Image 1 (cartoon, rainbow, N blue to C red):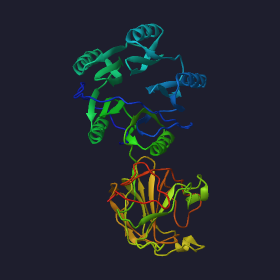
Image 2: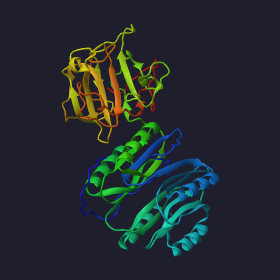
Image 3: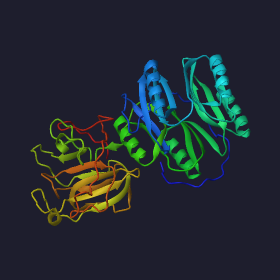
Image 4: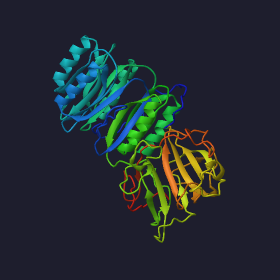
Length: 461
């Protein structure tokens, strides 16, 4: 998704298309806090924000209440509540004022409770429906509020049109058992709803709305992607169905840039962002893996090393233990070419003067979100795109080689938290930024860390 601020523009004020989707349990991911993950894909939306954020996942109700009280005392308030399989997941962010949570009510009980809280100056910020029972979170608020029990599609569209004309906008939208439940609060500006989109359709629609000055305020994942867009400004990032480690990495990057999660959803069939950076050929293997590889690892077992999350991929077609140069290197992830060095000709493995002998040829790709993919030890004049060129995942970007600090022909790949343009073979100390943990997808794995000795089956041609 684009991260550029855009000017507002006038749009028609009605949703154009609504469809059917399934509501899944939601996983919220903490920032600067302990992370609790399950084995599933994770979709998220990030928007500008500030302050702390903590998450707990899959707690019993008693444990959830205890954790909520702890965070409340620390000045944090719930911004999202999810219930799945009798367990509670919450995300807390910096906030103040009263907060009330009820976990299981009939519709009539919910109405009565909501009327009481409304008179006390509280409004619903999140509503969940599980097995016909209602759970909700109330926080301080003003102005009107409308909430309807499950509606058919046509009933929902009719009601939404009425409330839109009265100056109300959707703040929460749920879909359970073929019915819509929604919360409307005072608001202004345009509003669009699209439902049942494929990921590609959703990306296209979101890009269009972003350019027109709209931002996501709700995002659901099920048998398709469903979202509510309203007038807004500032950066926005959206990912669907990421592997959890990739999600944690992206989350940390965005947090450092002043973005906070507004929505997180569990998804089936998680996918990694990255693919192996070479062709599908049985000759490729890992000769040196992440810091925690049990055989041979970058960083020597220390995850704080600059290259702790790096790989050395060797092409050894005859299995003689020696790498072979001249292989196609492909973009593991798309982006814009940030730096190219391809004039080096020497191998400097035993050199004591890298300024003289070089550190090898490399290309750096800016992924646009604060991460940079780096590809090293390339052949002289072996980089194909130029600085500023856009490349897609799978594009051929270089030819492998044996330049620089290389014990055998190979490609070194890692993803950095940034790239310092002051870095050069004569200015190494203090200019490198650390690598981050990522996962790969290949023909046999969807969320995977390649290890020494494992079979590699690239799907990146």
